[in-house]
Length: 439
Ligand code: EPZ
Image 1 (cartoon, helix red, strand yellow):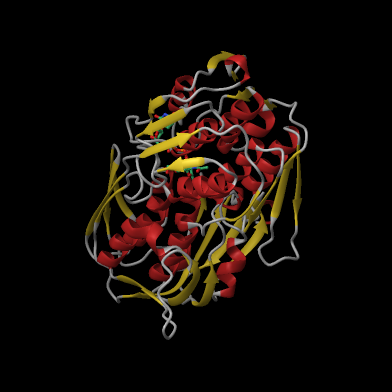
Image 2 (image 1 turned 120 degrees about the horizontal axis):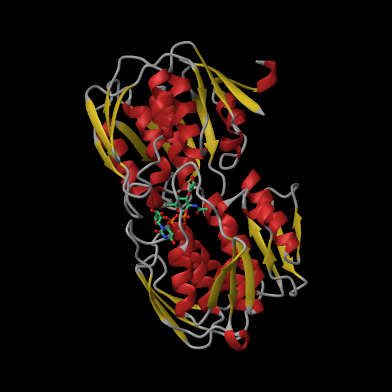
């Protein structure tokens, strides 16, 4: 297993190009199961989750080709064998997003067997809303030996009216699954309390290009008129708003000025609002006469000398994303005063708290909230990565900390950040990837 060794305290400078979004790419790739024509996706990041999804699609009869010499590194996915309907446990267990194939398989092939994803480091992660939505489209669903077994009676789903709200709001991948199921269902489907995340809008964009009839993408009410078949498409994935927000925090925590290209300003409204209140200015780079591109533009990050404390509540989009909670916590550890962070999506997503304490942070957890009392400095220490975003929070803390921070188990980080250490090295950070056994 790999570890990172970070010598903190270096100022960063330079430019980062934000990669395409992991969480958009995974359901987009699964949507290629909805057609027997080829779907090409540009800007899919090179990550272990993406490689696992490629493997999963391979077991489901898809031929996949990635062209690494083209700047957009297009992936073409072609479902040439429509007979396979079972997603094996050994792949789905590596990546919860394996559940994304359920809706497309059921819609196109009339049946699906997908192993039920277990919990993970950030919480229980049920899929009851996915199944509720698919049942509303006529699916018959049972559980067999840990697998979800779903069938469309007569081979085709039928449109229905479904409410997808749960205790913490909507469900992102649940909305993706029901949306993908509805596009090929007979008749009209209405999804109320649909997830409004930009990744769902991106999926609706791809599906529309494939011939689907979808209204309301990006809003909580989706209206879908089913069609008989879909065609192939060529689509560019949206930039990764969480990677973008993480690098803004990297600049802020080291009081550095950096530039970010392919930056999705509009997808980060709540995060930029909180960062602004902390004293982090993210300003568009304007070119003479050109309008500011709020979807894939360029920005600079400038940080005030003193960071101000703030309150943060994670919420479904357009609220503050849970996937940036750990990163902003690291930043607030160095603010001048008391901040509070309340996790409204995954109330137990706080494994980074104990690790930050090892670095000298002053944090008090009370259920789903953490009071962050700013300290003058963080101090390097050996810490353990526990999940993807917690690991990113620890890297940020390490960049700012005095001395050396060693982060073990960075495979968590490799699931969601493409070569993060190379990006940070290019900005001037002192960060090395080593084998844990060589420590
Ligand atoms: C997506 O997970 C993301 N994953 C997660 O990204 C992200 O944290 C999460 O959305 C929330 O934004 C991908 O896109 C691959 P949810 P998802 O269903 O869709 C509850 C990362 O670090 N719920 O929107 O699985 C659930 O417990 C990650 O990149 C139900 O109650 O999350 C949670 O409280 C990790 N029943 C809330 O809804 C269900 O059937 C939101 O979860 C489904 C979810």
